[in-house]
Length: 624
Image 1 (cartoon, rainbow, N blue to C red):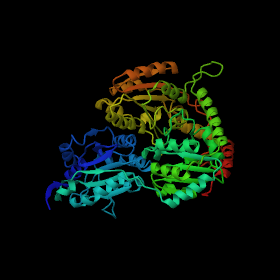
Image 2: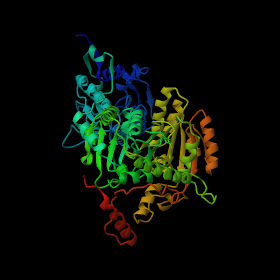
Image 3: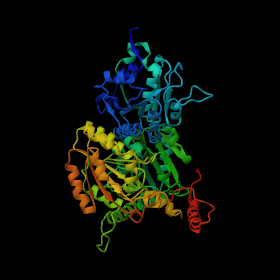
Image 4: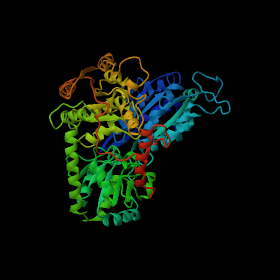
């Protein structure tokens, strides 16, 4: 057997460089490169290996470890989990900065490879710089904190271990059912240790995403339920896009005359104009979708993990409604006593469609769905207008900003939002112009994802060589948490259009605080321990200091003109507008959401809010 002598770090990078995937008949590298911030834990050995393969695996230098991993996540999402990028950090705080991003990837079932420095296996120099010592367990390092947020975790204590561990990590990243972050802890001494690796280990390999065919008995069980349904409803989740099953979803819905509603992750599964697209469902959904969910006798969930924002904490469905769940992951397909169909979304829809034959749900039901959708469209039409019905100007709102950008954007533009109030507002008010064009990170609901995610999405878009923009919606709170990838986007020539909606703090949590009877406290800047006036940050100047172009506007009309300038610009462009923090919210379309409220309080307003909130609980499904 022929061997080649390499360090462990060199072997990891050479292996990654020789992994390929077939996408639509084209063979491309599976790993598109990575993001890295070097420190003593990864610069000398892993850095040397990455330099030798900098052409095959381009490395982007991030400004913060958390945000660079978020960029890798957004890249993978844009690529529909068919390609991934890695993130590498030093030992200590550089690594712990990645924990939040790992949580995003784990929650959203997205591939992310983490290559992180670790303490010395020999322990001879202990304690070393940035080492967290555990007095009773010297084997623990900060890298053990990644175990709860990793689908695959390993610490490489001998160079030979990667022969087993690297393929296992790659398989996890590509598995439709088990997809999520893979973490490899790389001790600093072991990174530089050499080993005679089999040359065959580095043979080029072409991967293909597995498509699971559902069990015929599960198909038969689901078909019996769907055929007997009087009012079936399809809930389309993000798994539809990862399976590239949008065409099959549309064909299935049309053939069997079934209304479709979308989850937050499943936004842009259908175009806005499709007559069976009945809007987003759940806590931040639409009146149309939630009304249909409450009347449906069978709910057909496709590619969704049925998160609480989708189910209204399990209150949006009729108590006796049956749930059929098609999902590649057994865990997700079996929730709340669903009738499971474990399999790929595209394959499963094709199998179910064939088994259903010419069966169609009633025109009365689909007609009712269209009527509800029309009413919701009329509400959104009014909601996004800057003037009221009497022609008077309203205070600027998220919905108005979204409506104007939606009106002026190109069909292929990608929208990125996360956490705060914007996910709800984008989900409710955005009208899809092209499939798969919306990324609202609301699985982990992570503030700070917006700009970093936009950068990663833009890198993915640049590979497609299309004339399209990445549009980022962010609030002032998220912006102040993590904005340094404006600089990254400028440095790498990856233009973003960033809409900053400044409402003077964490306004959506202030709204929840007020809705539960509490006084405004520590959310809006004005209600915090401050010594200056709110709205003191000049976001335009701040963005310009990082090399971006930008402007501040004072009306929706001005915003429209600024957006046109942003579209014509050659580099990242930031537009800032102040929006109303109190009355500018989308008020319709919401479902109940379970939050903890004080059962005892000296404040009568809090007591009343608790009673009102709890009164909705009787509609909650108890696992059946």
